[in-house]
Length: 399
Image (cartoon, rainbow, N blue to C red; front, side, top):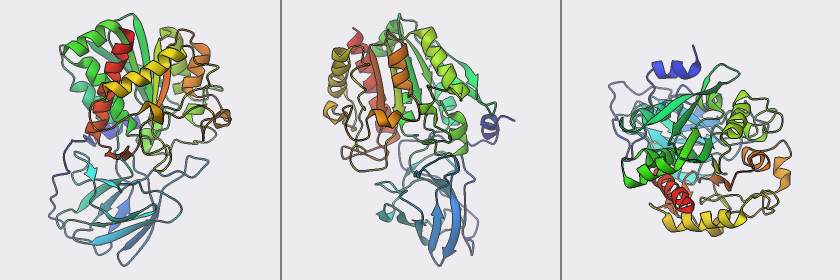
């Protein structure tokens, strides 16, 4: 069976709610030796050992040529215990500690963890929490996207379908809405573990589907196609995605060894969009990473620099919610990692688009912080609000 379908049939519908985690209940007794494993949606962990109340683990780097930080695991039988989790090989813990679920993925929230450092956190398990899922960041699975699409108003016209199949035979979904003359293509999860950015994409799609004046104007003005999971196999498996061997999906717009990237390029040529956006997450914390920003592209390839700059100005003005994007936070080309050297393994989606789609007026990557954005707490609700702001900006710059 297709692995995406198999997860669906197992009922692992991980629907993030906007409040605190709830649903802690268990009649099962604590285990003498807690069990730590990766048997959850997008699970990723290598369990090493436990000594007293300290668990030693590290993230599984099975797919990548470099160190990276994504992990997700299940802890069972820890009720009432205070346990310290130490990641033994490298940096892996975000600035706000882990995200947890007590109810098998129905709700998620930041854990009330203590002693949070770059490779460690301590957590006291509630007395009635036999099974707890712990993630490096808010997860977003294909099942969550399917549930979101099904929740859209039935009176609003949209369509979904299969862009292509991966080398493993998994369907790569797309979402299409609107019948306007201005075409837009959006992508996410070129790096499969960068899941918080997906909530921004959901916020954009929700704005387009609104039964409001904004939604009607968006659908009338634009033809929007979203590819929410470019590396869908990695998103299901819990891979890192970044630096995937021999190169990752966002460096594959040169050789096209992945059917997904070839299909995205074909879509771009068929649509000839005026705008395209790609959504990512940065490093865990520190410089350039604790806010939302765009890494600006080589000016030699930007088709309409005045309109591109205006887009950033309008987005800053239009923001809703607490995640304060600032145009001044955008990373100029040639600064920090944002240089031609960064593309030595191959061309990225946005750069390929700028080089091959002459109609493009705006082509931007957004790096969406994992947990801390200009001092604000990154939550699914706030990310969706930011997506709504992006949709408003897309409309305003076209009017």
